[in-house]
Amino acid sequence: MAWTWFHRLGSPPYIYNLAARLTPWFAWPAALLMLAGLVDGLVLSPTDYQQGDGFRMMYVHVPTAYLSIMIYTTMAISAAVGLIWRIKIAHAVAASCAPIGASITLCALVTGSLWGAPMWGTYWEWDPRLTSELILLFLYLGYMGLRSATEDVQRADRISAVLAVVGIVNVPIIHFSVVWWNSLHQAPSLMRLGKPTIAVSMLIPLLLMLLAFTLFFAAVLLVRLRAEILSRERSASWIREVVTP
Amino acid sequence: MKALSDFFDMGGYAGYLWPSYILTFAVVVLNVVWARRLLARSREEARRRLAMRAGTEAGAAPTRAGEAT
Picture 1 (cartoon, helix red, strand yellow):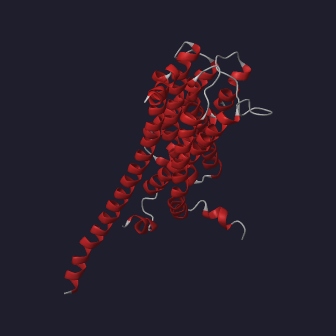
Picture 2 (cartoon, chains in turn purple, brown):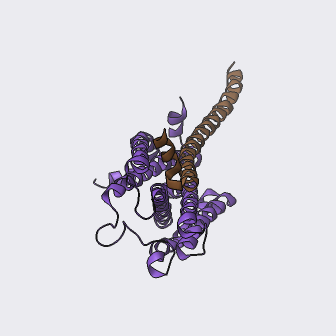
Picture 3 (tube, one colour):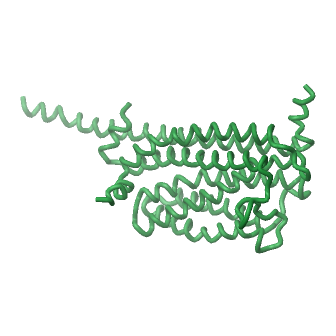
């Protein structure tokens, strides 16, 4: 009895309708929080004593970098669930994550490069943090390439899921790269033991942006998931109800 | 006016800061646009498939009607 909700999570029509209902609840708060974060981060927060206004790069670089890893983790976990329990919806979630993740990873790399130029004096360095983040982009692209090169959807699901799961080893490498090796990149200010090493007035816009980008990802994922479900459930009769205007 | 140009100058980091913000928010907006377009296309495709199936069923109907008369 208590497990019925769990079984419903594997049902395409249930997920399709749930995703449609939930999307605005993620999308609108994401838009508002992003706007608040922008104003707070660009106008209200004080200038850094060391980096001047250059530190404001943080409000786009940190959320995109965090999201690039968070999306990959979501993708790999969904892929693993799909592989182990053969749940099609889980594969659909993983497949929907990849293009969002790839574009956000590109953002994290470019904003990082543009931050590095004035602060480190270089756009790029084959540094552990930068290199492992670049590998993350290649993992996303490889995942997408593998999927589009495999005609049969179930085969594509399985093969790409293996790549996603194996690639998860890169996630702790990215996170701990700045601790394990001597990196140009600074160590974490937030995700560390003890208190964050950042002033509250600078922290608040960052938290707004982190929350906004997380909600943004959820909203876009839900829209992509619906498209993915529709293209997979070719002959299901429930589709008639959801696509007839 | 001075305050505004100071804001856009971003303490001399304008050349790095603004491209980053523009890129990031372009990617955010594009993600929304691409996802919505993908869903619209999938819905359209599903609708076409359903119409095609209904078409073949309707095409078979007159023969049955002809047999009846």
